[in-house]
Length: 415
Image: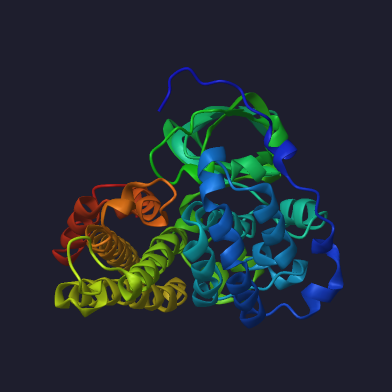
């Protein structure tokens, strides 16, 4: 990552002009089933622009505009504000088709949709202020390294330089984690502020997931009113304000499983697309120096089978965790922490299966794999980078799960 960061356009300049998101025609018919169908119709559009997104190092404006118009970002907005209150499994159905077209765009879209769930855990004054003026929020949630907050009257002053701001290039708001000292101890808090109040630094020069535009963001001495800052701990265990405001189990769900689900879907969709690419290649390809169609070769058949089964197994794990996670808010501590740790480990395992599937496919793809126009090499780079996300570190995830099984406490705060 470059150390000579240059200032780029503020995020609000990246928002395409969209008016149809506020019309009633598409929204009246918006169900999880119709949304999933719309996303399947958008798969070719994302696929066509995937290379362009990689070169631009952010989602393509026309593609993002289509997502805005579709109603996709309403999935975790409460019904009170015109949202869908979709289940996590329905959310999977909507994101998988996007990931089959472009890993990076699906990653940004998934997180920006999920971050509306975070807003549901802010005071009602904040929800009225934001969702009362627009149908959803487009916002990254930046966490590391956490910023700092100090008391200033009835509010706070914050300062920070955060990395990994996926979605910031089309954002109107930004969620950010900050530490505040209370009675000699530091407490992690969640803030939200307009994207125009932050500087976006051109730091996203990477070898995979390039199209996410996950640049750094900074603020210095920014005032945060009291209704735009909440403690992280209650949301972590499904006891945030959203659990008081809304009866839907969605808002009683702990934060980490939902985050892990959102981050895993692009890996599975990308692996699914890679299986399809290999399937098509084997049907019509004859390896140089032979006269036998590759589809007739047992080794090729076995590679295709294994890659397909790895991908299907990863999806089964994902859907199982999505169903279990929705009921996790009913479980009290300390058992709930153990369940959260186990789900994280399961999803890290699922993402590992996707990496293995894509590696098998690439080994069978021949020299043409290495052309930058070949979507398979981008799939491998994207999932390699995606799987480096801290929640998918298999060593840490398995260590945590092993400790839990032995009745030992976690040795990290990311649970």
